[in-house]
Image 1 (cartoon, rainbow, N blue to C red):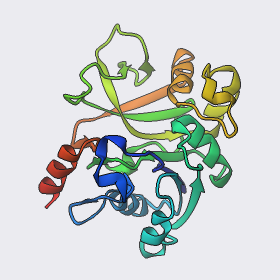
Image 2: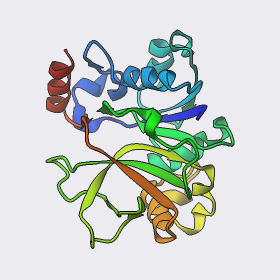
Image 3: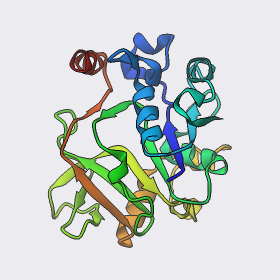
Image 4: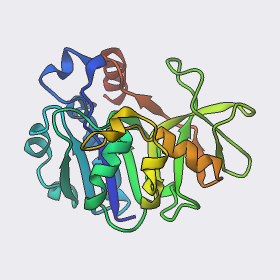
Amino acid sequence: MRHALIFAAGLGERMRPLTDHTPKPLLPAGGKPLIEWHLERLAAIDVRYVVINTSHLAEQFPETLGDGSRWGLRIRYAYEGPSPLETGGGMLNALGLLGPEPFLAISADVWTDADFATLPPQPAGLGHLLMVDNPTHHPEGDFALDAQGLLRSDRVLPRLTYSGIGVFRRELLDGWHGIVDDAGAREKPPRFKLRPLLEHAMARSLLHGSHHRGTWTDVGTPQRLAELDAKLR
């Protein structure tokens, strides 16, 4: 994989007051901004082009991260406007900056020790999601992973939680107008979640996954950020 997309456009409302003046991905954990951990791991697996979606306090990202050259990366910024476009709309908005090959997509507000090199650069079907054990704040999980590595949205098997990290083909977004039933999808630019597209791909057995059993944290509250910072230090 040569290209990656980092979702960094969220408002960080649950992280206030920390995010009143700093975007959540730029909050420090272990002595560096959260997003920097991802950039280092991407550089380590020879990703060279990174697109970062921005919205809330967008100007701080290029001020802090620059053009990516300090990591051997080329960073481009996809501004979504004053209101974030959600994961689906954000991916669609950034698509023109991503190459034709599959790309790695990462939520900026998670931390993990997962080795991105274990993810398939050419996923079977339309994508490959990294799944993790259900955290206490999300006990019901998201999707099931069967013995063949296929992801399923039914409840026959135990569910795992989507880590916010996956490899996707551009074709996942083909025909999104007919899949997403959301008022925001009719806005300009469109605003919609990625989940309906994932479930549509699952229904056609076109979405695979793997189970990461190591460390993963969804940095969704000040308390979780403080716990992660203490652990990393």
